[in-house]
Length: 433
Image (cartoon, rainbow, N blue to C red):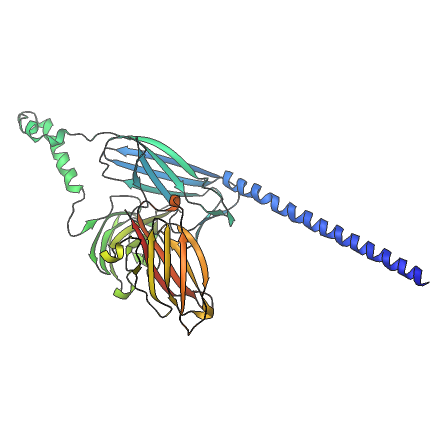
């Protein structure tokens, strides 16, 4: 009897094992089947977005127009890694870079998204002015979409290259001697002179107030004056419902939260004046203070975004040096002290002391447009209230380094309550020209 029971128990265990293996096999099979459609789904998203770009030129100016249309029957959500939604790069006939849209601009370093309904388009327009050399050029226009419906993209599929030519400016109006020799009996010759005089009046004039932009959709004739946190911005707006929003940031922090400006007229261009005040302690130690204007054109759902440089704040000469010798940098708050930076061209060493919760802090590196080193946690010997030394080695590939702008190291501690960044310090690693 005991032998019979043993045999029955053995049969039951084998059966249960077989069922378990079969269930596990079936589960794995299902898991594989779930993963496969994602690549096809992302490809379908990409195919449903139609990109168009165009370049129009006149004398020493090039206008870039771009759009990304959702041709599907479903709404799509486009994700971006920063407030920069597109990039424009222009090279001359020799392949040399002569214009980059994002140069001397700062963008908020936070994930943003844009919802595109079926048939809706994301549009943008930028102008390259004061082109010095006539000739043949090539523009690479890219929408910097990082994800679609929260599905990440591995490349930049929305990119077009357009060739264009800039003709030499008409030099006839500059020949004053020949113009003076025109007989007075030919009044038809006077018209071009008067036209040119009007044109010169409308051109940008460099004074204490700097003209930021020429006419464009939504905003025009923008002028900025002031410095050190106190700025006056004037211009004209042509926006839906007679209002637009604005904010001020430095590429890392929002210095003035979004506010609404009412111009009172939605049917024609209306003047506006912004008086902006930023406390001195909130100004960055270096970088660009940027005003962002946002509004919708009348009769359109497309949002016009205009970034206006208010002031570029430079580091002191001693902190601008990029020698490989160590240099001590100023830190704020109670989490970091005696911090030194050394190295250049992608290889950097950061040393110092930290007094942080649970003995850990986070660092990241960005160039104002892209994150070059993702947030990385550093563990030190002891947690607060003790001070512990640390040393961080950073290696950034040369191909990822910016051609211009500032490379910034950010150190911060994560809040014990909600994990949000506290004791944030932005430190200049290297400045590229």
